[in-house]
Image 1: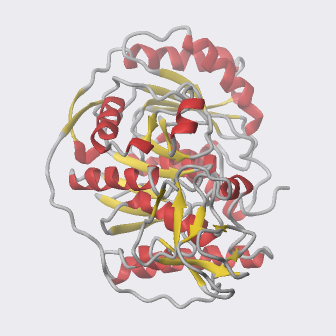
Image 2 (image 1 turned 180 degrees about the vertical axis):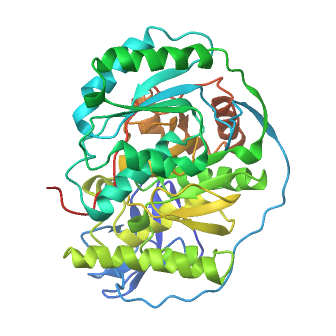
Length: 466
């Protein structure tokens, strides 16, 4: 059997080539495991055996269950690697304020879903005028902005404003209706302290012809944007988003560890990386807590985890309501197993900060972001926090992209070949230098991700809609 054993403590291995008894990417017992015994992978507990398992037998949901403790007590024992620092540069678009962009784009952002069609029509018309170095004009439509109350209403405003501040946006046009909860006045007040001069606003109810007015603004944007040039920029201005979706048994073996190596390299160049998917840290959160750079960061990280667990419990769901059917089919048995593979994306360096939803990245290093695991919601949150690119690992495949370039990294040969129109890089090769070179080409504008023409956003909604 072609297989791999990840850690010498493990009592299961991973089958790399399907046999009559064990599918590829799934686990098999390295020794007899008695009912009630711990199942060990990555050197950590991923569950308990629900039946006696003989050496060589398939280990999965039919004979293993989660061992997750919803009331675990957390401690802090620092154990992170501090990388040596070096310098590098990339070719990006310098901004008047904030980090440099890797794309020269124009965003049209509706404050409320009522004006989605206005924004789409403006974008379609403006695309005909693209010239020079402009990479695209995108209407970032959504269904919210009115009838949300309290925290939801604040989060929608925060997120849309954070989207407007992304470095890839050379110019931004906010389009409102004029009577929505998420009104233009609040948007302007939120953005005022940032002092941006590349953002314009209007409400459709306040102009006679919204299309004519919007196109007047966009034509002015295009005239300025078409002449922008890439310049040499220090790599410290790069921020990468770390995300996985449609994970399988290979995710924690190939793509996620490879992304972790890239994360370490970016941090070593004084850049930033952001890890999110808080529910997919459950079962591995203590390992991340021990990477927090100090007690204060540990306390904020612990609070984020505990708040998310409370949110699940208040909704009447167990915190281990995961993995998905596709995850299970791909070989992931429990949430602990999924989480231990998920956190590999953060690499070996310390966690320097904990960000709230919609909050911008501030420090060089790895930050943890408060957002759920849902692919588009989490990827949107990463980009809204300042990531110019999202590295998205997948064993099942997905065609989506958030509003920044979203690079798909296949975990296995089959998905990388079968969905070559989706997958940008096959991580089964574990070619770290080849992967880093592709990222640099993407950052420099020499390569466009295969999903890059698709741009979507989604919100993390927790409350009532009227």
